[in-house]
Length: 346
Image (cartoon, rainbow, N blue to C red; front, side, top):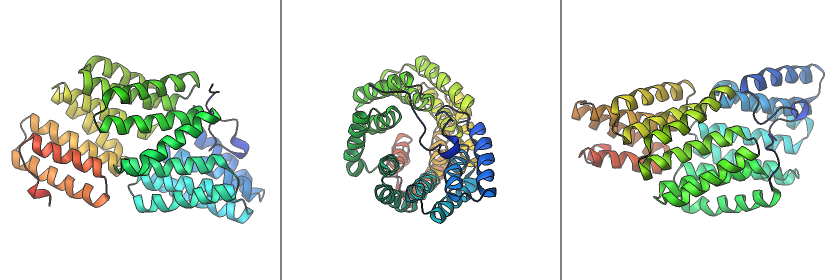
């Protein structure tokens, strides 16, 4: 049985904040509490409040502010001699690094966070850090390396009754099954994640699960309208909670669903919107995926063949450098789809 979802990254004076609190509200209250802690000379409290500030900035797409905030939180935690708080700050920094496409840095920071979490006796930050490592590998397409870790973390979350972490693990495993063509298994896992998230009042996890369900319904069943309905429901949650990254990925998925349905002009509009959003928050993976969708849509709408070939070749080189294997394979499929070959990508 799972209890109500909690947000362990909201600490110190901010523990009353909900997992569903608007990020704008989290940032405002977190900043106020952080300033109070700094004025009163309480570095431990400053570290804890600074963590919430860093996470709010990161999820709102404020990359530079998030980078400054997690580092300040780490310095305050170190000054206070709080090992667990240092681990949480490193977790935030590692998560930001992954979001920015700096995968080697993400591996390093999240690994350090897991070690410090264990030394500091904080099983939650250790679990979150290991989850971050698993997600980093999954995003890079290294399923063999991190599939077992996802399953291990899912088992631990189920055992502790941690709804939010269970939902995260289910969604990660579901995404890997979806990407390898095991659509029925992916759908079942996304559905379980959606049900647990809804019962636990985890609106963010629920929105991500709806996105996954919509994707599978579209690619497996061609159920375009039902997929768009689920995405519209998830989009409303993203807007209410100011989930900038999740909203951009939602718009990108709307583009995917419309493209599969042959509605290429509508798909182009969604991809253009998502591309702008990802560029605003400096999220290279989302930007690359939106560029790919946009290039395919424009090709279907009559774009010059040479321009499409050049765009896909440039994308392939970008993804090769960044280490995003699955996304790179998607570009190769697009090159085959339009009969362009892959020579120009090398």
